Structures are given as C-alpha cells and as structure tokens.
Length: 122
Image 1 (cartoon, rainbow, N blue to C red):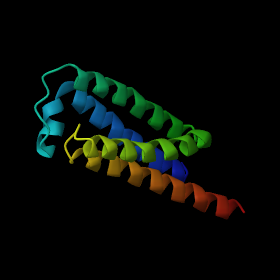
Image 2: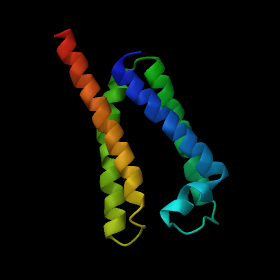
Image 3: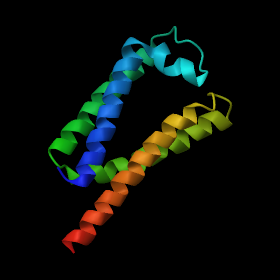
C-alpha cells in the first residue's frame, strides 16, 4: 500500500468508526463538544452515510484508486470551510470546526503523500 493510500485508509477507518458511533451512540460523540443531545433521527442518518462513505475510502485505498485520492483532497478541505461557515452563521457550535480540522489535516496528508510519490517517480 502506498503512503497516499495509507492516508486514505486511515481516514476511511476514522470515518467508518465515526459513522458507526453516530448511528448507534451519537451522544457519546457530540456530547463532549457541547452540542445538544441528539433526539432526532438526522444524526443517525448522517452516521449511516458516513459509515458507507468511510467504506468507500477503505476500499479505494486497498485498490490504490489514485484518482479517488485526488478527488478527496478538495472535498475534505471543503468540509472545514462549510463547518466554519455554519459556526459563523450561528447554526452550529464552534466545536464543529474540530471535525473540519481533522478532515483538512487528512486532506493535507494525502496531498503531501501524492506529491512525494510524483517526485519519486520523476
């Protein structure tokens, strides 16, 4: 597994675990961030979607789908922007930005690994 694939794989596992927890025990995840207790189904729906998305990441990493790696970079960066805008608009607690930071950090890691592999191949 290439280093770029490893970054995608690890991020995928993170999303699978996060998705599983959001769909089964959402308050364990959101409670420490000062977010209100989840009583509606939307957080569990999001958890199922995140779980499946994480499975895509894991499989793309295992298959070395380099095009997918590139696609995720802008998308994971956009998560940070979107979450920040929700906080600035007063629609979400500031702690939501931490989830965006994790996404952006993962995107930066993948981008660096892709760049390094291009230099190695010459």
